[in-house]
Length: 186
View: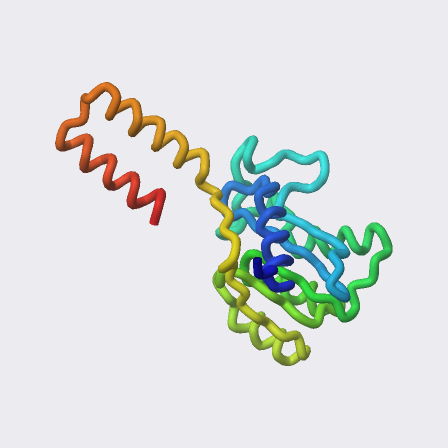
């Protein structure tokens, strides 16, 4: 069996962290690594003890949820809280960092940013990374996949089994089932 690469391993960790996110708009995870060792992790969510988006909805101002602390910031703050230096470290993030996180990563001494998905890649963030000598690299998960729609797929399959068992499938139901399957499994 072939082992997964370090990049795939650390990106998988970030995807797992994203599953802890409390924001309903976008689930993001970040893992800070130095010398191939994880030194911190974070996900986007409310301040400790605060109201969560999953409980009361997002608090949106100018198109941004202001209730959450971004995953990258949470990981950096974890390092600050426990006195762990970030100079020369790498970060693996599920989505390309926003402009504010970009600036925080540069200021904290992060040297390499690995991300799985493009997300509104701000041209100024790209420029700042370049000027600061921070490399960015897209690392898609090819070895492992994380299914964030597993509950919807399970419900879909159970519904499909019930309809087949009841033999109450008409042409309209078949079209609906086909459309749902395409949405969930493509």
